[in-house]
Image (cartoon, rainbow, N blue to C red; front, side):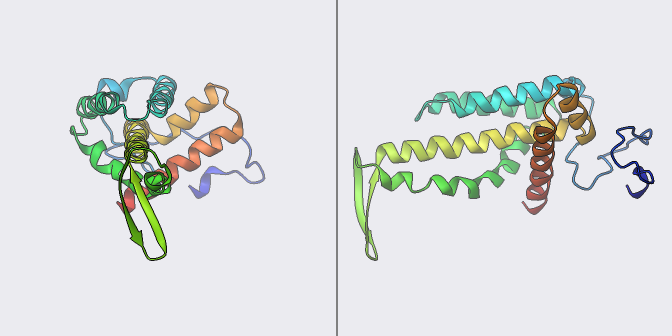
Length: 193
């Protein structure tokens, strides 16, 4: 790592040849798991675009569409199994999304339609609505599924291939930096999980 930058030429994008890999990638933050599955062999640019489309589709699922979310989860289970990760590895590791869904938790109490019940919490009078529960459930499930999509991409695509793919897709440098940061952040979170 230290020898990759030349003296005074830190912005040159020429990389030395990479050593042959065995097992996981050399970087401690690279989530890549070596394999020969059809998903591993897909072009990194195509995998990135498919992952982006899947996350967008999940985010557009209407509130309360449990069947659509179930279908998305079953597709991810099949992809995980096809990639040789085991059918439920993505589901288990995807729980890192749970703390982020807490931001949507107040939705349960913020709507005043279809009230299921009410209770007092200290000075607060809280009402639980069916619509609020549906919205929270949809956001929580969508977040969990979106993280699984990102994990599938990370587990089946070496980090350097992903960055190269983003550059080849002519994404703005700032977007490449953001995706790189998110990838590393995801790696840190999955280490903690």
